[in-house]
Image (cartoon, rainbow over all chains, first blue to last red; front, side, top):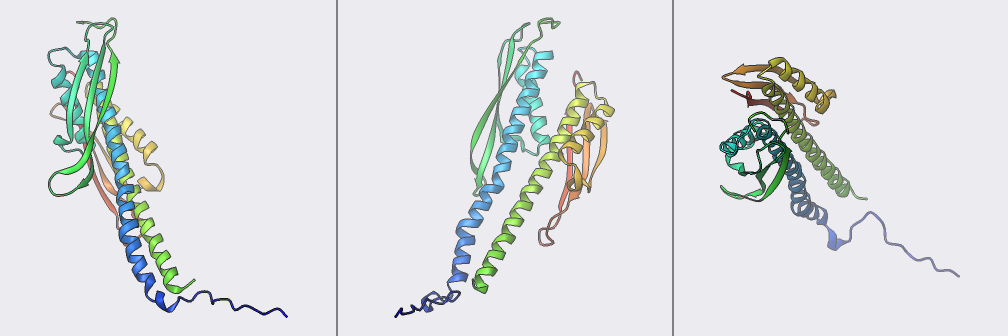
Length: 147
Length: 116
């Protein structure tokens, strides 16, 4: 004779688990879903800022390679970078540094490095985050006039 | 599967949908900014040519924000203001759910004309 074993009924919670779902839901949303959501929502902003820094450095390097001189290179680069940053919605302080290096003579290479702030979280006035450097180089034309 | 479990899963999916919608909003705003920036820089590079700015901006907006996503985004054109090429866009990006609402867009980009 085969004795039939009684299986526990599916779909019913044990008496000790009564009310577990609302607590688990609240904990799951608060500790897992919302932190993950904040991280996922901040990721596009990081990529956008890195891309903006690259674009600004490229634009500044190109402008300096075409018409720049060693004397006003830094000022010109800063102006171009701040314009591009403002067009992408960044406040003036969020581009922390613009550095120019290289040679402005014919055939030389002009390098522009843009350092941009990437915020992780904002607690109070100062955001916590890190900085990201992007360097772009442009060659000065061999036949550039005034070089 | 109990009713509270189903409700919990449904609520989580709703939250995921809202997050996805917010990511799309971020993309749309970034795309509009990038398109305007591209347009004004092109215009500024060729001596402040407004027609070049408008053509490049429309092209970039079409590439980045084509389809229904950009239906309510209106490019207002480029202008030359005080030695700068300025481009403006207004409009909104529609939300997927009534609880999310729409993203209002009023973006402006400018670039100093080269050689000025």
